[in-house]
Length: 449
Image (cartoon, rainbow, N blue to C red):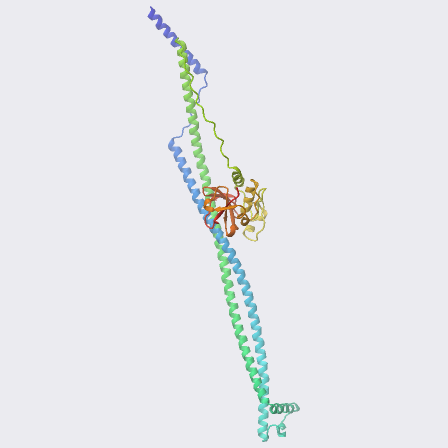
């Protein structure tokens, strides 16, 4: 009967252990049903889609950078051709004035020559009449007979004057009058030639003015078309950026679901481990055993973490600049305190109403960024180019300024590292982060910190 009593005790102990386990399980907090667990292929597909959208954004960013660089070139060309057209206008006015003077001089010369010719012809006619009368009277010049045939007192006086002229080398005087007439004719010819030259210059000036106006109109149209192209690229880029954000949200959602599922799986594993532990304890309590002493496991120690080294003032400068992303460009805008109303420039900035809007231009953004580090830059990129330590642009570090144009006077941006920069680019745009434009960049970057 002893074996039967042992079997009975074992049965009772097992029943007690089972009751304890069931009681423990019922009092523990149950893990909820599993959340959705997206497959690896779904997550990989989402990541691939996001990567493709990101690559497309990068490609469009490069296209936009090139389009904007071309737009700047065309803007410069428009300004040049406008000035050239103004020059042609001045030249045309000068040529027109010269032609008017030449015409007036030619007209005066013709009038003088005509008057001189009439006077000489009159004198020559009187001489012919006098010579004929002298011949008919058979008298020598100077005789009384030379006065015969005079038709009036005025004619008689003229004959007397002619005799006096003849007796005092009058014929030489007539020759001199003839030479004067020839001289007048030459002057008239020269005046006509000057007029012809002036007329030709005026015609050339008209042609040049027309060509300049056409070139200016073509430049303006080219800039307009390029601006439209840049706007289209920007629109496409914005759309793809939205698609990228949506794709990233999808990936983020899938990864969040996977993380939630992993948390659930870990909780489920802990639940099962806890249930197994409680079952073991209950079984141990139901079956008396010699106590077993377990050594406490050694707790591994971890070295104290090192405080990360901060970026210091460089990161302060970059942080201030990055805080203005999306703020509109405004020519002449920005100071150490933040964006300000722009100023008129008589050109493209006025077309975008910069003078009536709050924002930054390129140098104003630098003034605001570096003011956070206690550095107050002059508000002109050309002066900023000489404000700090110049280093070869190939050695530019994060927080250095990059410059374009002679003496850095055209544009300035803040280098972020890894080929990227932040800038306030031009009227109609906003503060943005873009790849560095290496074309036309100055050979030195400027380091302030």
